[in-house]
Image 1 (tube, rainbow, N blue to C red):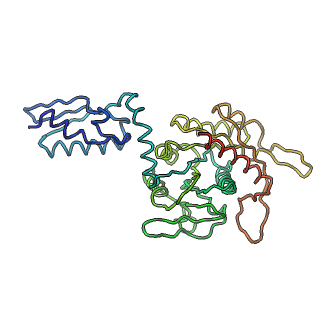
Image 2 (tube, helix red, strand yellow):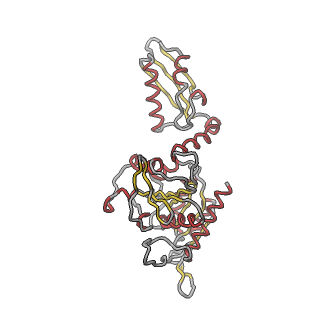
Image 3 (cartoon, helix red, strand yellow):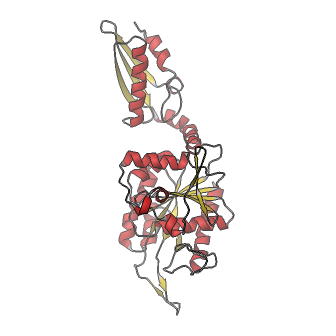
Length: 352
């Protein structure tokens, strides 16, 4: 027959799945009761997050331990740990989580490029921000995490596929930027028909199974909206900072605020707003505001941040020897605007 002391001894080494600390360290075993006549053990457990898949796995582990050591039946109740305990161990848990995520001691600066709706140029911003960071002397990678609407390889004119070395995938390098995308693993532009858990597994693989090397910045081109992939990123990378892309139309900015609010609720810092397709400048120098005005400012006010750049409508220069339909050259007027945005972002990371 198990005693209270034995139950505590058996369960103390079990780790909180979010804080990565043992129940002994967090004081997570709150109450133990034993009904001798039925050989039934009841335990109340405190963990950082309840009602999750991780809790279910932890519950199965603990039931197995107790039954293996003599309990006939087991009852477990979970509750959230006090805030001060969670705050005490959270920074260490986040650091360990990200170290595991990328498989090394040094982690890059993570930037998620988000929007609440498609068609605002989010992927174009991701590609050209990566190019501008590279031109500033930074080592940069892109994860095309828009699993259903991958477009980064086409935008950058990438025709090669990733290679495999040992158990690692080697990302494709283009213009000095390393890229991984679902588009590399789909034949003939076929549609991706996956459910949430499968998407999360693929995103995790892009972090853990790709040999990124020693990056300074890793940009994530998120799908539009606030769905599974965006939520996975918020959980996987606690220190990720977010860049919100919108057009100047007030309605687009209103919708984009949803992506920003999601970032704020998950404690992701918002770097700022990029207002894409802000205007069209005619040959006479006159600006025509095709999609309206004021949306970026209104969005920045709603999210308590600032507009980092306003990008006009204009094609990149045509180059006969390079096919990269969405990459703006360094001396292009929009390329110069991206350079300013990239410089502001670097300054933000170097200040913190």
